[in-house]
Image (tube, rainbow, N blue to C red):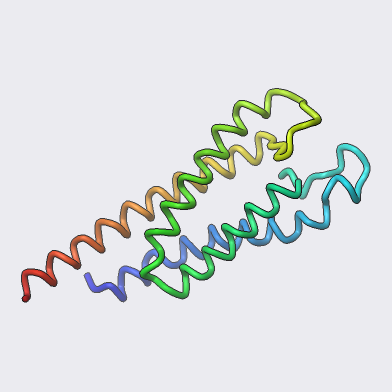
Length: 143
């Protein structure tokens, strides 16, 4: 399997992950609690807080960069896996409480989205790493 084919297979998954989080991140800035009344800081069913919107926007932009540079897909997926696994763990612990001092303010819809994103990033990261290692070993055999 060629590296070009590998990028072709993995790029759509990374593109969807990046696009979903970029859209949620950018639109979330319009639904910040400072601009709305209490309890209206949601974007559809997802939380919209300043810190969460920054995290989603950064992950989305990095994902779009990785889509245009297929050699960065594995690194992006491992970064997204670690980030969203951490957010899922933090969100599972904090979603059960209604602490007003929570800067991220995750709800269960966010936790499900972050868990699914983490699992998808893990799967793509493993596939990209294995294919990269396979291509490197074939290149060494041909030398």
